[in-house]
Length: 166
Image 1 (cartoon, rainbow, N blue to C red):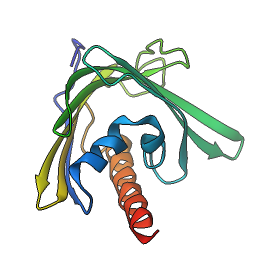
Image 2: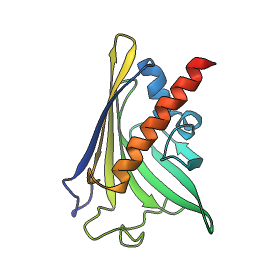
Image 3: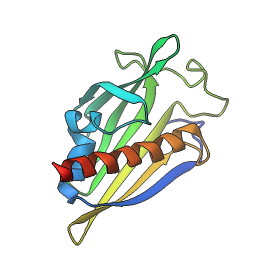
């Protein structure tokens, strides 16, 4: 992580998906695939720009329908490690739609929330199934962000099930 005030908290989620590693890799690295599963239930991803290479950037918009209309949250980051079908590491910061990083305080986050966090995705093939360990450093394990990851991976499971049934 790059913050001086970086938290030692982390969300660590392990899942084994009934899909090959190369498909799970695409679901993390191909914008169209990523849009199909990312975010909690009720969220859509109208924008996902990904330059998946070390030093490349990402810009993602998550949109939720609220009583007063749609609410958008933008996230930007930089890829730190890219090993095809094995390991993906990127930073994540809240931003505006142009990728300009916003501080946690500007976004109404609680004191101590880091501006920049780090996501690490490690994939292993286990008999044709993909075992994933996702670590999001800087996010408390009991936070809404942690719950959002769990919902997103549940969506990913449903997306894979729909693909298999076609």
